[in-house]
Image (cartoon, rainbow, N blue to C red; front, top):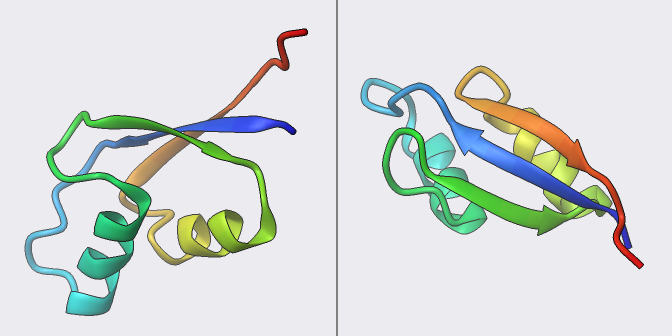
Length: 63
């Protein structure tokens, strides 16, 4: 399964609580935190909701 790397590049201060909760659900707490998540539609939807706060990169699959 493909993986994606998500980095929080902007603080969620001043944004609505649902966006903050989405970041917590993704595992992002502080600015410049990086998490690796599976590339599935549910995660993509969460990223879409906070796309102005995060940077997303696709990771190559390792065999």
